[in-house]
Image (cartoon, rainbow, N blue to C red; front, side, top):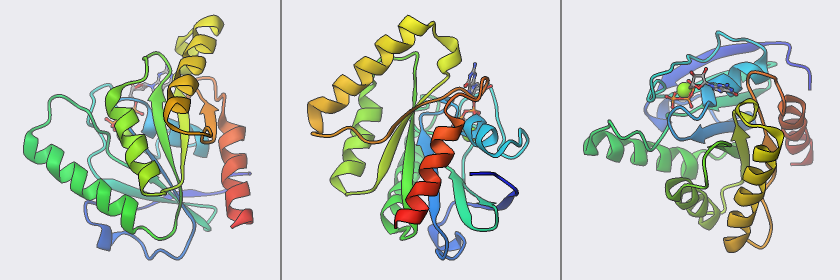
Length: 198
Ligand code: GTP
Ligand code: MG
C-alpha cells in the first residue's frame, strides 16, 4: 500500500468522542516505550506524526490518524508503566476495555512486544484477554535493529513457542524496526489485505 496522506484527526480519552466508526480501523497497543508511536511514524513515513519520547508514558490518549482518507490508524497509550498511580492504571484499563470492546470498526489491533525482552506476563495476559473476547489481533516485535540476527531468531522462537502454549494457531506475526523500516511492507500489505477481505 502506498501512503499518500496521513493526518491527525483527534486525541481524546472517551470512546464516544472518537470519529464515527465508518472506516476500517487499525490500532497499535503495547507497553509504554515499546515503540508504538515510532512504528506509526515509520509506517506513515512521517516522523512527526505521532509524538515520541524516551520517557515512558508519553502517549496518554486515544489518537486517531486518517490514512489516505480511507482508514483510521490509532495510537493508544501504553500499559505497564510502573510510575503510574493506581487510579491512572484503572482509568487506562477502563478506557482500553471500552475502546477494544466497543469500537465496531476495529479490524485489527497490533500488539507490540519488545524483541529484546522475554515474553512478559502483562503482555500475555492482555493477548489472552483480547483472544477471549475474539478481538482480532496481530503480534508485532519491535526494535529488531537492537538485536543480532541470532538473538532475534531466538527471541522470535521464544515468543511463538509461548503463544502456542495457549493458542492452537499463531496470530499474524511481524518483526519490525522503526530505524531500518523492516516490517513496513508486511504490515501495510496486511492492512490492505484485511480491508479487501472483509
Ligand atoms: P508511550 O507513548 O510512552 O507508551 O511509548 P511508545 O510505545 O509510543 O514508544 P515511542 O515510539 O515513544 O518510543 C520509545 C523509545 O524507543 C524512543 O526513544 C524511540 O526512539 C525508541 N524506539 C522506538 N522504536 C525503535 C526501534 O525500532 N529501534 C530503536 N533502536 N529504537 C526505537
Ligand atoms: Mg507513544
